[in-house]
Structures are given as C-alpha cells and as structure tokens.
Length: 352
Image 1 (cartoon, rainbow, N blue to C red):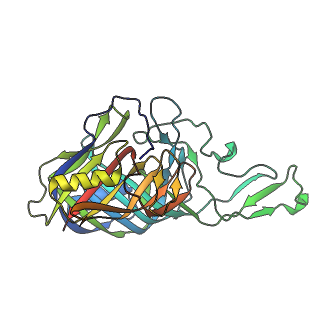
Image 2: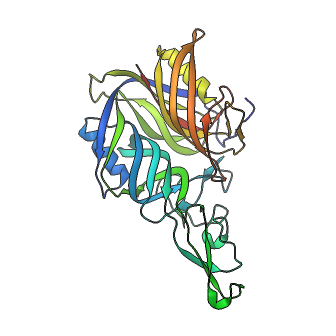
Image 3: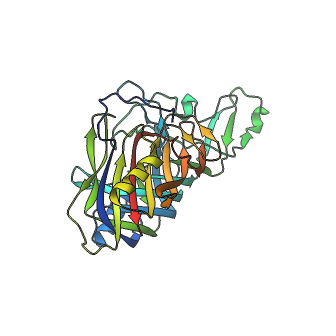
C-alpha cells in the first residue's frame, strides 16, 4: 500500500475503535414531507433504537442538497467538501446507506449514496462555458461563501453536474453568439455524494430496510488528528436486550487499509462470518480488476460487504460505489491491502 495522506494533527495511537453490540433487522417507514434526519430518527425511535444502519433504495425526494469531496482551501484539513449542489425538486435516491448516531445529544445521520436528479433549465450567453466548473455555474473550482449547516459542510448553492446537455439557440440571432442566449435542456443527472440531512426532504413515504443497534452508538466527537468533528464508535446502554445478531460498531482512522482493518476487527471479536455495512472515504481507490482512481479524497458506499474464513483466516470482500473529486462515479470490488482510509470509515458489522 503506497498511498498516504497527511492530516494536520497528531497521529492517534488508536487506529480503529470497535465496540461489540447487538443488531436487530428492521423494516421502517419514513414519513413524507419531513427532513430525512428527523424522519429516520423517528422511525428508529419507534422501533426502540437510537442508533443503527439503514439502506435507501429508490426513495423519492423533494429537496435533496448534497456535497462531494474536494480539496481543502487551507492547511487546516487534508481534504474538504465541494460547495453544495442544489438540484431542482424531484430527485430519486437510487442506492444509499446511512448511519444514525448522536451529535450534541440529538439524533444525527451520515449518508452517502447515488441518485438521479433533474437538472434545471438555465440561460447563458452563447459562446460562454456552461460547464459546472465555470464561475457563473458555481462549479467546484469557484470560490464560495461558506456557512456551516453541518460540521464541515460548505453551503454555497450550485447545480448538479450535467449529462446529456442539448443547446437550443435563439433563432433571432442566427445562433452566431453576441447577445443571443441558449437554453440548456438537460436530462437527468446521475450523481453521487454526501447527503446533507438537514437540507433533504422526502417527497413520498418510503419503506426501508435497517439494522437497529443495541449497546453501542456512533457519537460525533472532535478529532485532533483530522481536525474534523466525526463519528466515534462508543458503548451505550442497550435499547433492546434481545436483539438477535452479534454485531460490531466500528470507526477506522486514516491510512489504514479498510479490508485489513475489518479483518482485524472481526478476528479480535471472534466473528468468522459477517455482513459489512458502511460508508467513508479512501485515499484513491484500487479495484481488484486493476482499475485505479487517483483522487486523494473520495466518498464511498459499501454496496455489498462480507467477511468469511478462507485459508484459516478472516477475509474481507468489499464491493463499493465511489465518487472522486472530479465527480466521476466508479464501482467494483476493492483490492485488499491497497485502499487506505482518507478521513474516516464508519462500519456496522453484523454476524450470522
């Protein structure tokens, strides 16, 4: 493993934190017309849990603002977030995963996923660059005023990356430029990123699969190494003592290979067969088939994760979706030993 990222703070001696707990499979209903943070928290609470993991599949959204990974504007962080993408209403979360935890004593979720969002109809002067990186469109390279809706979340409003653009020139100008305008009639944008939980509202009720956690929770803490406020796995009072599955709630620190960390955690806790759920960031990505993504900051969703005993030891397999700093989305099976964590990785590991 050759990739490495240097963070501004002292390197912690603890490279991962793992807490044994219990997990219960749940089927939850999210209410329409509510912020996703509150909808998820209410659904878990109704089942008797304060913490857990949930999978979102084909969930229709009204408002759904999000960010992607980006370079840090200063030396205070090794990586940062893009300005906020604010698509028009009517988005669809195709596949996403979220952890429900606690921030400042209140429910708080962290969500990565893929979605389809409608792109707005806009006007620009013919001959000007309509790409999302141009200043008038507010792309990732644009300097933006920043406000903190969520710890570390930039809140300048820009539109999502575009696919399938079609330019319709104003015939009165003959399409030759000058003062003429051109409308951008866009198709759906296929995007991935980090959903802002207080800037995302469900358009319809949704039924989702989830795992409630007893005996542990992810709690937002100040992290000296990365200089972020991030989730930390911590023991808590059990919500239900009869949760059916042995489980581990874990957080992994920078520059540790994610597959090797999961294997070590499972070995320490005696789990020989498990499903792995989680989201986080990696320093670039190397896939099993040889593809390599060089972006040093990424957002990751584990689509399918497992641990099995092979050749006498725990072996982790992670199939992921990933978005890098360019906005390009890739997917595939990670190559073990070559994918170090960038800022953090949050895991719910559930035994058979």
